[in-house]
Length: 403
Ligand code: SAH
Ligand code: SF4
Image 1: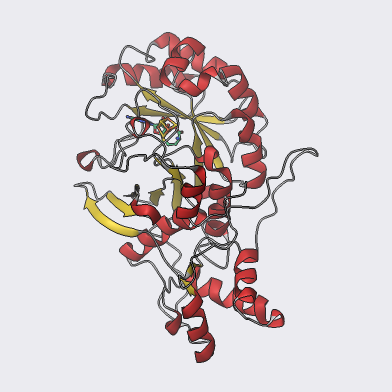
Image 2: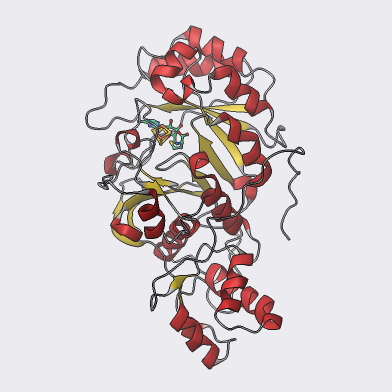
C-alpha cells in the first residue's frame, strides 16, 4: 500500500512529468528501465509490443524483478515466457551506474565513485551504524550553488542526475552489500540500508522532478520499499519549492541553516541573498505534516569564529521557535583549500548546551569516513563542465529536450 499524502493547496503548480519519459535512444541502442515510473514502464512495454491487456501484469512482474530482487538480466525472469524475455532484451536494459572505485574507511563507511552516462562521476556514501545503515545519495553532478564551506560547491554543475541514476545509487549499494533477497526469501526485517539521506553532491530541490520520481520508486512497497519516514531531503534553502516538496515527495526535511543573521548566512550560503532567513523559515512552517514525529532537522555546520558563539545559539532557538525541530550540529569537515576551520570542542559543547536547554535535541554529528574524504561536504568528483548546450546535456542523460 502506498501512503496517501495530503494534497497541495489549490493553485499549486504540478509540474508535467517530463523527466521520466522513456529514454529517446539511438536506433539499435537499448533503453534503461531503471528509473521509469510505473506508468512510464507500462507505456514502454506497450510501445515494445506488449499487448495492452497484459501490460499491467507485465509491469508488476518487471517491477518486482528489478526493485525487489535486484535482477539485472531478463533471462533470469522465470515467470515470463522465453520469447518475451528475448524481446525485452533486444529493446531494454536494466542498468545501474558503474562503480569506478569503492573505498572503505576504518570506521566501516563505504564511499562509491560512480560513472554515469556521458562519463561523468558522482559519489554515494554508505554509513553503517549500530541500529541502522544510511545511504547518502547525490542528486546532481556538481552544484550550481557555492557554499563557502562545501567541497562540492567548488565543482560547477555539470548536470542533474536522472531518476534512474539516483535510484541506481541505491541499487549499486545493495549489490555491493549483497542485500537482495534470494529467490523464495522475504526481504529481511533488519535492513543494511534502512535510511536514505539526500545529502550528497548537489541541491535536490534544483532537480525536483528527478528526485521526486526516484524517491517514489524508493518508497514503493512492491519494490525497494524504503520507509518515507526514513528518507531525509536536505536543502540549502530553495524556499518556494519547500512546501511543494512536502506535498509531492513527502520525505522528511532537513534545512542547511548554518547561520542566524542574514549577513553571515549570505556569506556562507549564497542562496540566502535570494531567499533570506525569514522567507526560508516561513516556507518551513508551511511544510505539510509537521509534528513531533515528523520534525524538521536544522543542520548547522560549526565554523570556528564565524557562527559558533553563544549569542548565535540563543538567536538560533529564537528563530525556529514554534517549528517542530531538531538541530544537528555538524563539526566542519576540512578539505584541501578550505578557508574555514572547525570550532573547538568546548565551543561546540557550549553551543549544544544552550540549544538543549531550550528544549531541542541537538546531536553533534560524528564525522564518518573522514579518512576517505566521505564526510559531509567533502564529496567532489573530477568531472568538469564542458561547453555544451542544454540540448546536448539532455540527450546525453537520455532525456527529451523539450521543457
Ligand atoms: N545541497 C544540500 C544537500 C547536500 S550537503 C544542502 O546544502 O543542504 C549536506 C550537508 O552537509 C549540508 O547541511 C551542508 O551544508 C553540509 N556541509 C557541506 N560542506 C560541509 C563541510 N565541509 N563540513 C560539514 N558539513 C558540510
Ligand atoms: Fe551545493 Fe549543498 Fe554544497 Fe551548498 S552545501 S554547495 S547547496 S551541495
